[in-house]
Image (cartoon, rainbow, N blue to C red; front, side, top):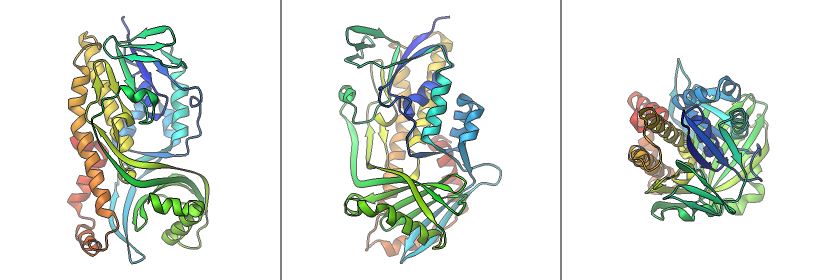
Length: 380
């Protein structure tokens, strides 16, 4: 049997997940990684995925995946008005879960352990000097490695990204996401999103008496209050859950928030993937879910080519992938951007905002539509 050769550049969550989901096809995979980041399981963030995406990952990661996730049956939305929290929507399921939450470091550790058992996967730690899209090769020092497909899973700040097409929709929110792991003496079982005057705060329970929070704050506010941001976060959590509950922030980090939607996903035999093609506001928790739907489609198209005996190299594979995934990625990114704009503090529009939220509160049709969109995207 002929194995097609695929190169994946990037050992972040997207690069590792891509290798995980493609490993059982008739392909060999070279995974390029940076020495300082590989086997680094210190990522302090958590990730929430939908029911359908959970089932997809479970098929490829095995039963051990069940042990590192926390299932959530209810997601509640709150709007802050005059120091009170209006619970304007609740998404819940009776017979299945709304979402699943895991710590990034645990999932990365599981993927690396799984990939190392596969002899068709090779981990390579070399500096990449050049990438040739036409002939589909990677040049490291004097060596050239030829492939049928090269997949770039890199952040926007990577030096390799100079080969990316420049056209994209880009917007700076002038916001900073403050994310932290929080321990408490109270077991918070359900996930919630609070639209606060300082910015949206997501609460994700990932273990007993442990939550992860993502608070999107105005950049100026964060810079001004950076030294006391932990105390401000604890004060806000006490206001939400009660003064008697004790909270302790164990680990935290922050990163800038921006919208980036690339208008081209490929160049000849190179696919730009993950955060390289779309980065959206964390307000709806859809970033990694969008990526997983991208991975599903990519795997489906590669499998189709292989089953028909069609070469991956110089085929219509990447064009088909772009035509299939770009509409949803674009509409979701812009839709999340619009949602963020709606909930931003505005003295003129805020009174009308409260009326709108009260009108739509727990509307069954909107609830059903929202659950379907969150689970399976625009193509449900």
